[in-house]
Image (cartoon, rainbow, N blue to C red; front, side, top):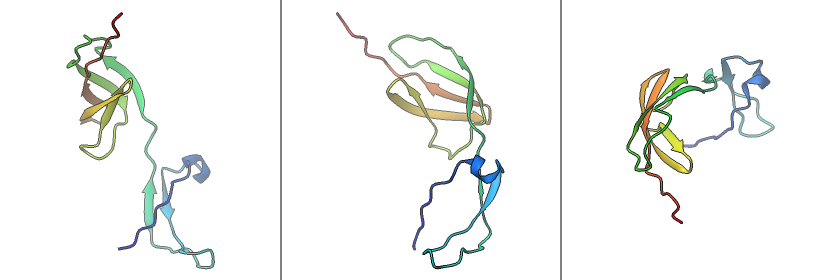
Length: 108
């Protein structure tokens, strides 16, 4: 099949509507389709609490993050600690978890 890839504009350009119709044209001479496809904007994610907020440099500390809304595709949730990305665990729209990675400490 054929695909068209488009970047969504900021919601502010669409009057901050939570959902908008998506229409396409294959060239500037064609009329836009009226296919009825709908694109929905997600609310901005806010991180409200991290618990615990400290842990050992050896990592492996389960960390609970509250805030949200946490939405997305199961299995694609990630948390980043510094430059290290680890898998995340989705518990609810307002709570996720991650396991803190090990950190190398500079010696010297």
